Image (cartoon, rainbow, N blue to C red; front, side, top):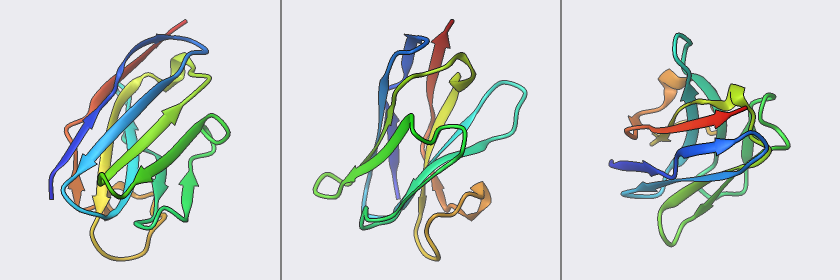
Length: 120
């Protein structure tokens, strides 16, 4: 399984970014983030079909996870960005088991991470 994350960058508070994660197949997927000095935290997840989505309370209403299964790509649309959203964002694939999982250690494969920086 290969995952390639992209789309990070520098944006002002209140702005938007869209992250992409291209996978080598169709899997349940999640986005996590890790800020300097902090533990990796769950952001959002989506089932392999795309029917079910899950969000951390901190991003609910601002971020949207979606997928294009024809392209084996998962997206994270991030709106109304805040400085506290600054982190390296990672996509992860869950090959088997239940979906909607928020624990990082239950995901089997990880992308390389993409930096998101939100300036105030």
